Image (cartoon, rainbow, N blue to C red; front, side):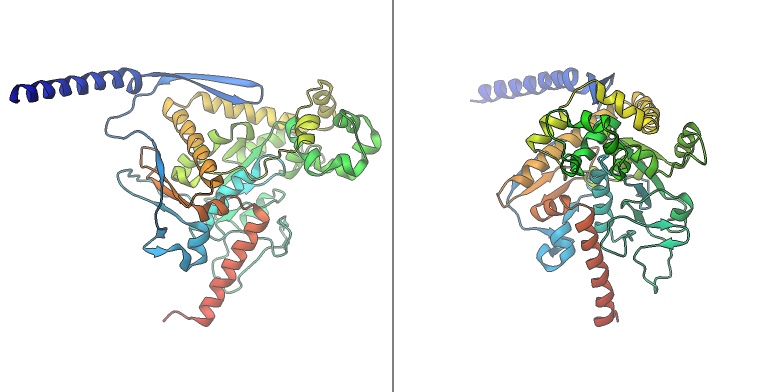
Length: 423
């Protein structure tokens, strides 16, 4: 029997040694060719993706039944815990940086900005940050140097907010009166033709003008009474106008240069995941802080076939005549963003793929009916966290209902101080 044990022991050692060599050559010291797909372009990146043995690989945990706890309290005890439960473990991922909590995000309609805004709003909600909110039910922030239609606490001695992420036309001087000097300025742009199609559908332009048939976009762009209407303000040059452009004050290129100086990050919707990973690294956040679900995903057959799927080559040509400034703005910052991507190492692109995989797992988990939790185990990009079903609801809340949630939390805090003063 002792001889058999020795043989088994030797066989086990050989298997472990062989497996280690295979893992090293196939996984640890591998060359990765990573495609970045954005619009009709593709960027290929190839680099060394050496993974240090001291940092475990990033794996998605299994679903499991469990009680939901956060900071030692059951989630049913408070609104915050019920709607925003997310827990994190400081097992071995140590960072020396301080998380950034001051963000200005210029939210431009139909640029994919709802996804990014949702990330910022959830971060603010979970960390009890002050978010700039419209005083009325409108989701548009009215920001002028002499007029601010926003919620204020006259007893709050701190005049500054932490996060601004609702729709608002960009006015640097007005924003600086509300936000700290160390705020990070972010905006997201979208390929103009794609944005035009999305806005055309969202604002129901066809229905308003009675446009029918397969060439609705071309009909609109070819008919003066349509493209000269007030509706065109939501369709043409919307991105550059939201950023405060005025033909009377400066040239397009000078304005683009101003935006380049003002903003720390000009994200591109076609590279949403890459942009979020960049922000995550700059902000010293966890990967769990930038996870998201698609909120306004349109699946209507009419939109998919007649509008989004319209590949008529005349559409871009006609649209450029009305939105030349938006095309110039987008082309400039897309080139700049892609140049930044080319300079990233393999670890960056692996983290992008990890974010996508986590988001896919979360989407599947949140759409399931089972009463479970989803564990994301610690690795070099995350301290590890657990997603509970109540958090899925929070991830699907857009700006307007999120404003209601933040306002209710705000008033709840005020009344708690009045009714239950701290001793």
